[in-house]
Length: 288
Length: 140
Image (cartoon, rainbow over all chains, first blue to last red; front, side, top):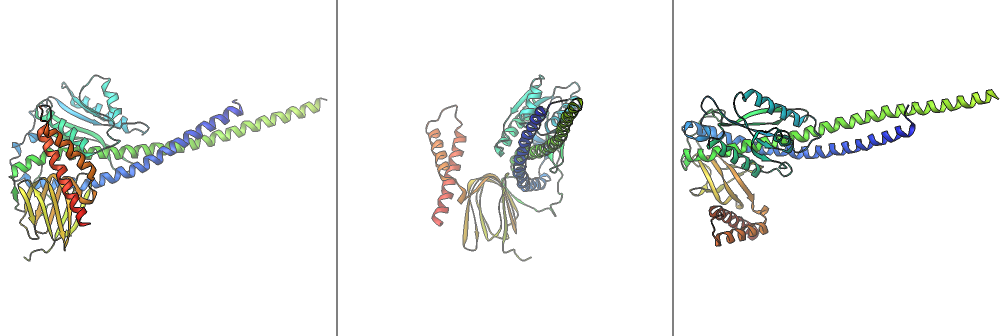
């Protein structure tokens, strides 16, 4: 039976852990709020962009642009961008991503060499040690996430693709569904999936183009790639804080349970000690 | 069909939605030159250059600095997808001045490592920012 002092010490330890997890939860909650706002405020731009792009599609020869060119049947060397978190203590956030990436490598990698682009410290730590062909690395960008980061990544992706070193580019990241649910998604970034013309834009309008539609199209496509990456980064960022908040909330609740159990046990131990002392006194008195 | 009397102007950047209001007139820096847009304009799609944008509601004029992007014009609506956009009041003048100085230095000492084109664009951006900011000040 542990002594009273040991039990008291343990309760104190659990209590201080609980204080830390509680604070972390609060921090995650406030950061989540900001991250969520950014996801929402990035949406109008992406939507408008897609509309303009869809309007253009019917007017230009889609096969003309290198970013739309489909690879030959083999698709010999895909490049996978893995967007993980920079830090842990966020439940299964990072392990889900790593698992999904591993699955992609196993499924798609039959006889093919898959190159990786690693964004986020946790994913990098995992895959770097395993000897993959890493084409791109970026850690610590979630602290000051900006559009410039996305542009940087897009530049690498486009370079790899147009130079033929990668025949396709994929993204794997956590999509922010709600605070409680994040979903891991794998998306093809390049070649850009074939766009549907028309769509929900109402009747087609005949635009004047300045400069030519082809040139605008050429400007628009790389922007589109940047936006896709930017959105993925924002989603992942919001998911991270949501996952961390949930994990820390669970931890706080668990430590509350633990404190309760330990306190009960401690009381029992103390009571047993008192009873034993009384018995000793009583039996001592009876002996005399 | 009667011509619309107002333009619903919307300016968005990748980070945020900057302006969303009904205006009487807009001028945007198109890549082929400045475009003045009044209600009832022909549908038009254009790329944007680095430059100054203003819009007018009644007699009130607002200025923004803009760098790259696209504009979609419809008779009653103008949507601007800007890569970078700032309202005149938001521009950090000291920063823009520092950027201008840096770009000037780079242009003054051309060397092979430095991208002259990039320095030129940086120069242009800072000049536009300063110009837009000064307009906000003179109006205030």
